[in-house]
Image (tube, rainbow, N blue to C red):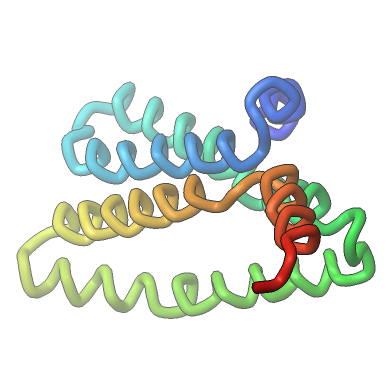
Length: 148
């Protein structure tokens, strides 16, 4: 469902903005997850998390294609692989870190809050990346600027 609706949203808002808004939403879900105690609340959390988590695997390749399609299209898949390699430490160590935090503080609420904070920082950094059009414009300006 999420990957179907993403295409329409990317056309309207842009891929970086959509990915960042998904990360912000997931971060908010990290903060509200410990407060979900009834079955409907947990179902809603699970649905929303799955809905916003799905595009996080498909949008980076779209962002890379937008950014590098003209300059170096042969490197897009390599860059996507590098992005995915940067994810593996979190997948590998995340459970161990969360369980240590839970043992030390008596529950997963603090681990969830830490995950939310890290997600918010990542989304904020994603919003600081200039669009491919801005990057191209800056490169052209830099190239046309006379050296001093």
